Amino acid sequence: MDNIRDDASPPPSGPTRRFGGLVQKLRHAGLRPTRQRLALASLLFERGNQHVCAEALYDEAQAANIRVSLATVYNTLHQFTEAGLLREVAVAPGRFYFDTNLSDHHHFYFEASGVLEDIAGGHVVLARLPTPPEGTAIARVDVVVRVAGTARV
Ligand SMILES: [Zn+2]
Image (cartoon, rainbow, N blue to C red; front, side, top):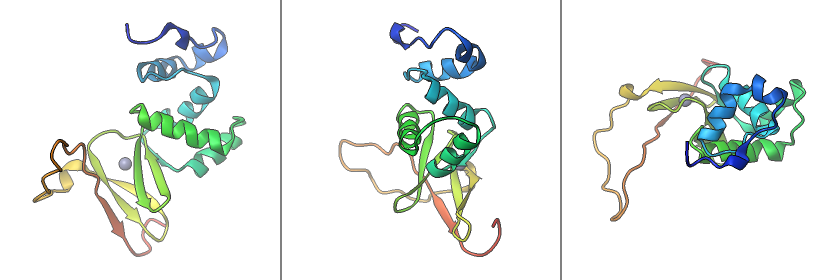
């Protein structure tokens, strides 16, 4: 990849081998594979698709002896999102989930428990969308279907 800068090299020892696939993933996204990013990427991307919030990821990092601050977790999640590795899903003012599933899909949000669950993209049909303002285009439509009740608690 010609557009990846050479100074993005990780330290040549352990982490490179252990996080080989993740090093590539971060580099391809234009992010320097630092130890902290690799450790958090490992929690995010090596266990199948998931929806995580910053606080939960921070707790997981602590449990895994990854020494990061909550601010670093927030920053890293936003960097990953800007680099296209995660999607941010806003479920309430100030409440965000970060989704590792980048495919076309929507969400059920269980209000009682705060759980987010995927809805396959084809299961939501939008009959009509407004014309976007001149000079803009619709990049993506996210539907969050809010569910009340006690299921999925
Ligand atoms: Zn999702």
